[in-house]
Amino acid sequence: MIRIASVILPDKVCLVRRLLSPGISQMNVISQRGTHKKSKSFAMNIFRGKVEPAQVFPFPNVLKQEQKETLQMLLDPCAKFFEEQNNAAKNDEMEKIDDKTLQGLRDMGAFGLQVPTEFGGLGLTNTQYARLVEIVGAHDLGIGIALGAHQSIGFKGILLYGDKKQKEKYLPSLASGEKMAAFCLTEPSSGSDANSIRSRAVLSPDGKHFILNGSKIWISNGGTADVLTVFAQTPIKDPKTGETKDQVTAFVVERGFGGVTNGKPEKKMGIKASNTAELYFDNVKIPIENVLGEVGKGFKVSMNILNNGRFGMAAALSGTMRNLIRKAVEHAHQRVQFGKTIDTYGTIQEKLARMAMKHYVTESMAYMISANMDSGATDFQIEAAISKIHGSEAAWYVCDETIQILGGMGFMKEAGIERVLRDLRIFRIFEGTNDILRLFVALTGIQFAGEQLKDLQKVLKNPKANWNVLLGEGYKRAKRMAGFTTGPTLVPHVHSELTAEALLATRMVEAFGATIERVLMKHGKNIINEQFVLNRIAEAAIEIYGMVAVLSRASRALNENSPTGQHEQLMCNVFCEEAAGRIMGNLRGTSGSRNEARYAKLAQISRQVVDQGGLVQRHPLGF
Image 1 (tube, rainbow, N blue to C red):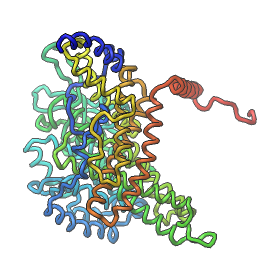
Image 2 (cartoon, rainbow, N blue to C red):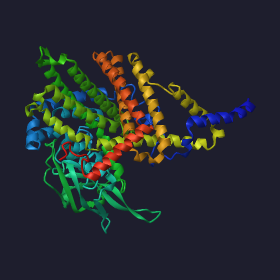
Image 3 (spheres, helix red, strand yellow):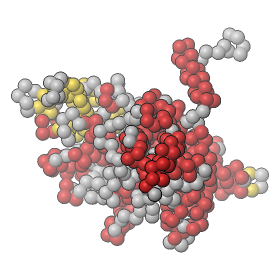
Image 4 (spheres, rainbow, N blue to C red):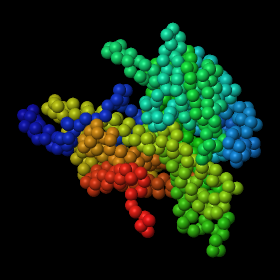
């Protein structure tokens, strides 16, 4: 047996090398410190073509009975407040939140939903928080932004990184609403590129303060906040080289420190009730104890704050969509045209069905992520970004279709939907534009996949010592090429009625993983410059996560014999079938000479338009 093995080994190695492709041995992948080779994140693992069910099946249910009862006690008063006391149209017209409304929010504890009770907050979990902001999103997105800018990102850094003294000093007054908070990152020269901020904080000669100078723009709560989480460049000396470089540091800044001023409230398209203003810092003395986290680690602080807050956006927009769909259904069921109510016509039926499915996917994502966070998951950044992208675009679609269903009435200010449409537009821009988040999703996942391929690259350097590993990898690729699944499937985790959809989703994961491997082998580290490809990878990832979210939720409904189980099954059926088609279309778009030629032409068209300063072609009339 030993002799035979020694004879056939080279052939096996050659076969494996062919299946793995010679390009892998020359591949350079993106690397970043802190990348984990193992992760329980479903979205991360699909970039390796792997089904990791731990965080998605069964659909997570993390609330204890006491937490459910607490939440139920809060829901009715919250809904009643927004239905009876708050006037969203008035807030929009005044371009500020009514004083009585602000006080009512304080009385409800709305400014400290997730602040621990020991610091005067309600101490809610992420899932409890999501359910309450869903109510806010259904009624007034302007207030939603003010509250979110305050606690979802404004003082979230103190919750995540603050030491005991910082928490004791700031959280009680922030939780009560006595003081407002703001998150100050964006500058005129740095939008999505957070590392390029120019505000600077230099240590004072006595070493007791940082002296801050600079400005921030478009800061939600900028004109009303008393406590600011500010990010600025600080000079850091490398102990090894002696070289000094600027690195971002996060600070807790009080308006009362002096030198902090703001501009007039910005005139905005929507979310007018929230305050948005420019902030200026002129020799602001920040005590060194107000550094948030570590000096020079502010970029990580800012990213984690945003990652922790994005799931709430999907939850809030689920509420927005729920309210819009209710209005659309009410009108469609009452409006009679050509002798029948318009909800009986196929065109309107398709609109309503797609609106309901988009809501179902967004809501499923939001509560899956919040539950994962409550369960202690730390690797959820891709899922959070996906939920923000999908939720903001789904809500825009639902609002646009609601206006279309209502027709002329939907266009009228009286209906209140035009205000929602204006409010919704910002959600695809702030807290990470959807365009940048798509790149973030793709590159974060590719980086994770690249770590595995780097390990395989090491194995290839000594094939005889690792031939079992190589055989396994080669066998997996051979099965994939033959159309078979190569690893665990989703089938055991879903209800039997959803077996076909589970198999489809599994195949999408494997096709996705194969595509990532091919893209990495072709482009190597230059993949960061291939945005036409990266966008299609991100789109496919978003769809796959959507498929799994609804498969899990619909399975739970069927397993529990829920009265809505059959309806959820229908939405899952249609969404998964259509999503699979979109996924394959996007994966095909990542390679091929025809696609590459088309992308080159698109880039050329864009360059010519830019060079011309606008459209290039002559007017059809010639003048």
